[in-house]
Length: 261
Image 1 (cartoon, rainbow, N blue to C red):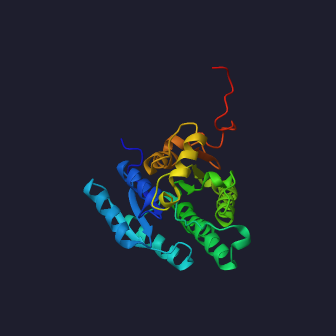
Image 2: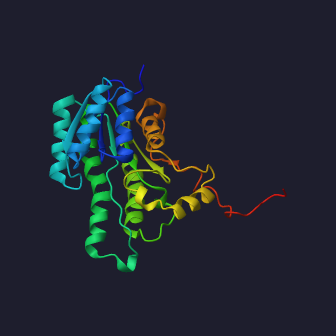
Image 3: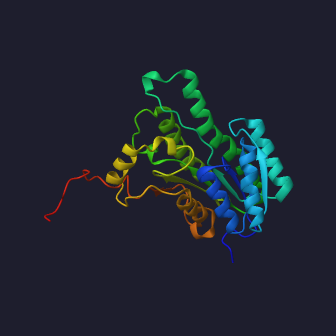
């Protein structure tokens, strides 16, 4: 039996990158997928791939930082599939700018797209999950940079830190309804968003810094989302699943030897 058979999942920002991989992985485990994104053409490509593999998919054009769009997204999903059991808040953007150079407009844009969207989607889907009375799973895609500083990304790190704090509060509030809320903290991962930042020098430094000596593929992060969405994680809520190749836990100095050769 597939882990997510007969479940309905909304995945935001699912046209590309980690969101795309999560949508495909959940579909492969039997879930019906609502792909919410502004990039409709790319979203349709993901939906076509799901259907070719025998799954069911719906494309919803939605700006998930807009409450009206979020309401419409939920309504469209219910019209197509009847219920909602899983929400993956993945949509997000990044800005590279020092705090002293970040404008009010840039700060607001990142916080709105990356944090407010998580609140809006969670609020509307939680209402539906409570009404259904069958529990559910909300998965928020954070970043190791909610914990680990990232220079020139103050707004982004603030949004991800806020997402994790929000997730713990929501998890407490909805636990009586058997709705679980967890976060995933991906480390360095190859996506359309990050590839331009992975210069030769950056990759070389990551190979020194990440104990497993790899940059993740989006599919590896998607495996964690399938776990959190499934009954395998039925006793897990308010937690952070870190998928970073050991980046955060390793405090050793790159290039230093701690034992005699």
